Structure formats: structure tokens, C-alpha cells
Length: 237
Image (cartoon, rainbow, N blue to C red; front, side, top):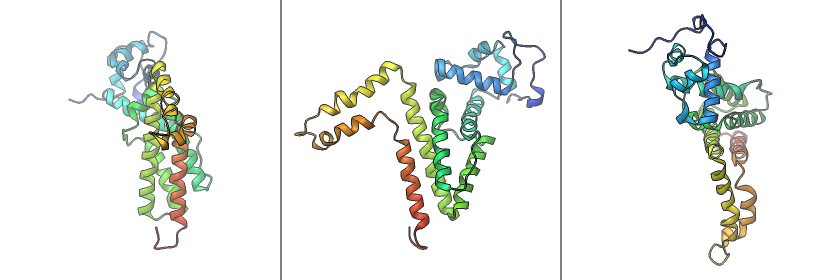
């Protein structure tokens, strides 16, 4: 039988935790984010979370149906942080670029949480609000609904895919990350033109670029393609 989740208004503990705090949905999510940052996904369990909160593990289930429910809440919290204080300006390209960069930044601030949640669809309030904002921006710009849905799909998947990719790199142990970054200089930059002419020709450029995220460039390419489509005469594109 599924566990009953207590409504938010009825969740306050009558007693404080060992740390002197009162449990809440937000406190549990924030503590879970900290545990993911410090210990990774394998270190986030109800028992350990309860210990970190100074409460019994069963207390977590007063707020969440299970650990997967908590994972979805973490995903929605990351979207909430991306959307915080964002307002549309009426310039659809600038608005979507800003929002995409906000999503990327919010996820990279919590790389372990990003790896855990970037592929999840929560259907929760902040995710729904973000989707409404993106689709509204595209429709107000003049994209017909089929184009708006298609560009929205590409935009959000690109944002989350790069967030997951870049977060996975940040989540690596520091020695492994440094070793990966050094490969471009230690291996690619030393390949001879005789055997690898195209790599040799661009090696200096690769060394200068490949350890940085390609997301801003990819985002600009997506938005430029969408803008060209919008500007094309009817019947083209």
C-alpha cells in the first residue's frame, strides 16, 4: 500500500529535531542537495538523510512517498532556481538565451543532483511554469504551434543534455577531471600532420576550446536556426 503523504500545512513536527530545527519539505530538499554534493547519489538514502536532519528516517516519508518522489522534488527545485527572478523582455531570442543559460547554470551549481535528475520529467509546478514560459515566448514571437512545439523540444532537451554532460564532468573526482582535460594538450596537440592532418591543423584551437562547455555556442546555433525559420517567407523552411 502506498504511504500517505501528509499535506504541507499538516507536516510540521510537534518537536524540534536534534539540531533544533523544524522539518519541512524545503529543508529536506535542501539537505538532500547538500548530501548529493558531498556524497553523490549513492550516499543519498532515507536513513542517511534522516540522520543528517536529526530525525528518524521514517520522518522523510511524511513528506515524500519515497526516495524517487524526493528525486523529482529535487529536479523541480533546480528548475525553480533557474526561473527565479526571470522575466520576459519581449525579445524572444534574448529571453530564451537567458533562460537556457539560467537552466545550465542552476544545474551545474549542483552537478551530482544534475546527473541524477536531468533526464526526469516531474510534471510539478516549477517545471510546468518553465514549459509554459518557453512555449509562450515562442508563440508570442509568431511561431505556429507545430514549430513552437518542435523548437521547444529541441531547446529544453539541448539545455538538459548539456547540463547533464557538463555536470558529469564536474562530478568527477578532481584528479580524473584534470587528467581528462590534459588529454587535449598531451595527446591531440602532439598528433603529427602526416597521420592526422585535420586534427593537427586545428589542435591549437581544440586545446583552447574543448575543456569549456559548448552549450552557449550550441544554444546560439539553435536560436539562429529558429530565427531564420521565422524570417523565411511563408511556405519555406
